[in-house]
Amino acid sequence: MTQTDKVFSGAIPEFYERYLVPLIFHPYALDLAARVTSAKPKRVLEIAAGTGVVTRALASQLPVTTQIVATDLNPPMLEHAKTLMGQNDRIEWKTADAQSLPFENESFDAVVCQFGVMFFSDKAQAFKEARRVLKSSGLYYFSVWDKISNNEFAELVTQAVEEMFPQDPPRFLARTPHGHYDVGLLRPALQAAGFTSISADAIDARSRAPSPREPALAYVQGTPLRNEIEARDPARLEEATIRATEAIAGRFSTGPVDGQIRAYVVTASA
Ligand SMILES: C[S@@+](CC[C@H](N)C(=O)[O-])C[C@H]1O[C@@H](n2cnc3c(N)ncnc32)[C@H](O)[C@@H]1O
Image 1 (cartoon, rainbow, N blue to C red):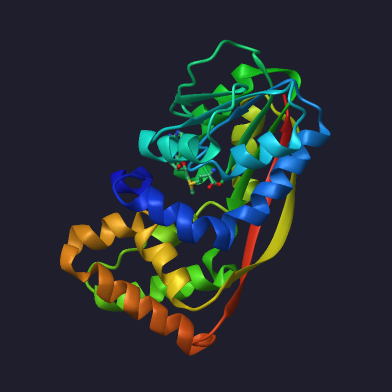
Image 2 (cartoon, protein in one colour):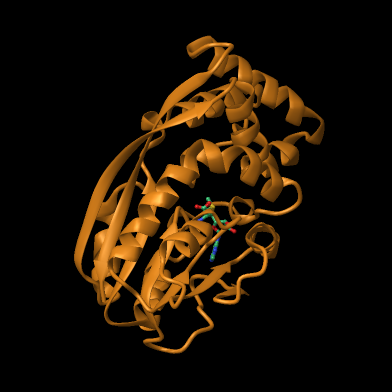
């Protein structure tokens, strides 16, 4: 992982929320919130909340008496989430690094993290922190994307952008969001942190958009892939978006598109 892989700022939060959330995050957020709700927690910590798609799902599914603390490393993402949520007294927002959580030991019944673990440079430390803040028998829920070949638009975008910079291809999507899908490799670090009853479910969903331009905008301009492209040539962001659009149109259609996405949802007990 490079330093810019975890930088979600500037124009990224807006493009992320507008294009990427409906395309790939929303169905998984509903599923994750339902899993958390079924455990009837009284106090929930969300890590890497981003623009708040899971926070909003938790707020609508959990009883009003359940407290939610929503955190993220990047304040611009959390600001976006706060604005979208509006006034809601049972949600506390806090900037926090997953590897150094600013909370007391054993202060939550559930910890939830949708598609954030791949961004933690020290995953073992992040797992220890999740375990530390969980009460005994509390549950940790997190998700990771499957390999890029099972996530069609992400793969097409990566190939299109690679062709623009063959000497130094921007590989953010393959390296980080789609680079940590082997739950077998994460399991020893979870066990070392003190988690037991670790299970993982593969969940397939569809990624749908009215035209190929939306997934291109989502991945090229709404993720840190944007940082990588701009570091090589800031004037070529629109060209990258057009090339990604053409790649998706060539494989799918110039009209509505419908691609495969696949992720793993992991549950572990403290
Ligand atoms: C792909 S987004 C997921 C956001 C949200 N959970 C969702 O489902 O839309 C990854 C998030 O991880 C956050 N992040 C990256 N490194 C982090 C860290 N060390 N601690 C906490 N959050 C981090 C980023 O700011 C970003 O909001």
